[in-house]
Length: 66
Image (cartoon, rainbow, N blue to C red; front, side):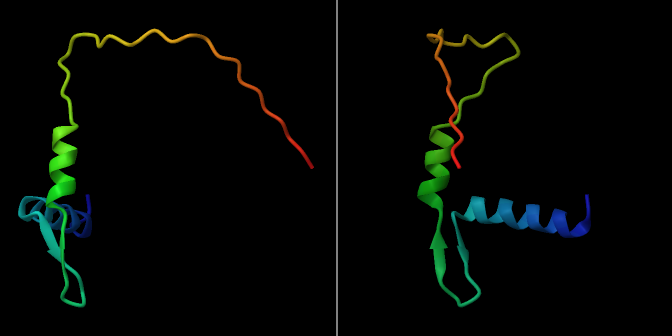
């Protein structure tokens, strides 16, 4: 990975940890609520198979018009 990409990744980690970042014009943008929502919605599954819900078959149709 290039040094530039490593720098971007490091900045991203710092922004997420801080919960906010400063724009080029000096405004502070809070991302704390979005980060917390992402964490709350994240699920971790172990190495065992994950059950998938059964779904009814559907018919898909495509129509191409001029």
